[in-house]
Length: 124
Image (cartoon, rainbow, N blue to C red; front, top):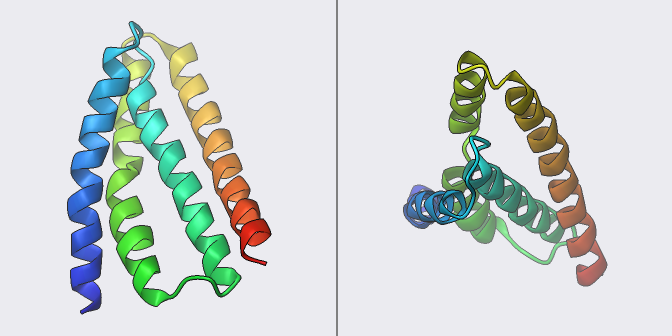
């Protein structure tokens, strides 16, 4: 049953990633990969909230599999982040490549920490 929960979450997360990426990127006239940035930070926040809720005992194994492993696993994308950073560097946009690495990692970590803190505050 666990693998079905992961598959169901992934079946929602993957198209959500694609649609969000396209919608965000269409609104920005820049080479910076804002769409990938948006899904990675959003997924980090969601995973932080789920982790905080789990640590507080407010959610169980089923929700973690469905939303954490499935949805967030398919929503976020380290491979696309890496590819887009490489593409930026190879095209001469090295400042954008460096900014993508620094901003994505810092903001993603900030989002997961904020999510954990939020869930702990709400679940206690």
